[in-house]
Amino acid sequence: MNPRRRARPLVAGAALAALAGSSIAGCLWGRPRATIVEAPLAPAYAGSAACARCHGDAAAAHRGSGHAQTLQRADGPLGGGLKPSAWIKDPILPLTFRVARRNGEIGVEARGADLQRWQPARWLFGSGRHGMTLVAEAGAGRYIELPLSYYPTRGWDLTPGYLANAPKRRLYHPAGVPADHVLFFTCFDCHATAAADTPDDLDLGHLRGGVQCERCHGPGERHVRAAEARQPIAGTIRRFGGASAADITRLCGECHRAQPPPGFPPDAPQLVRFAPVGLQRSRCYRESRGRLSCITCHDPHHDDVGLPARAEKVCLSCHTSPNRLAAHLCPVNRVSGCVGCHMPKAEAARHSLFTDHWIRPHHPGESKSAPLVPSPIVPGVSDH
Image (cartoon, rainbow, N blue to C red; front, top):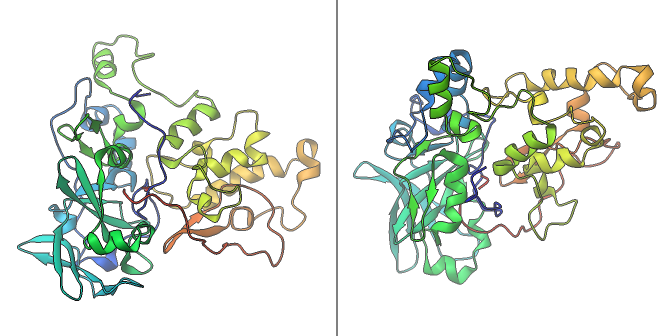
């Protein structure tokens, strides 16, 4: 693990995280194929194209996944297809916003009683499965999460962390409150590959947009050279076939969070957003003897098409065995419906539903989607 990585703060942005779900086709004029930001390879990196020479099937599937498309340039093909929005009002301030286009740039226009601001976007955070947030560069090591984000179920609306800013700050920074690069490093580090932090700013010179092969498996140059020379490859790259559930959960938790954010009560509905947190609480995980991990159900190279049926097979592989789990056979339905009943979806971020990975019974009449309460989300960019 990179020793420079920090524990992730809880930061705003429905799109700022590794995301999956609905597409953003309703937001675009004939959605173009998303592109990945290309840059010179970082030292010790081989690039995803090198990985694809031996791992073609996984690489081909991954290229179309939400993971691979979760950070793009705003001036790329996807940004060029984003539609402007209607005016959207701050709920308490005399400010209105809209996504607009000026001189070919996509950004946010803000208007008040005696002001008008225009802030072009540089980055699109999020694949659009859960959402997409516009981010600008403000110079001097500062970045701005713009006040409007796109949601597949809603269209353009306020970015989740926007209202966490005090009204005075929102009024003083009508097009988005700048934040230091130290906070934004956690966003780029999870939405891209080979992001680096420096004392004064982010080093994006080697950035590859999206979660590429080497974001999870580590720099691959040594691995590729060993494979090409037909030398032993053990230890040359991070592999997960024989990894423990704890190690896999820890890796996924680098971006999806393995520990609750400080200050959240154990039953806070926002925690549903962080799948590893819920999974580790579940009795299934704790009593699986290290067999149940994120990749037991999820294939990180693919989006979750057909996932409920695949996950249900995992449930039934244990809970239909009277000899092993006679006391834990479902009294309601022993052949189907496991995921929808024991892992319901909940609104854990603005206009975004997430699957509750704290696998447990939900009793009749119990709300499957606890109402959101004001959250101590730190403004900035993710988790996102």
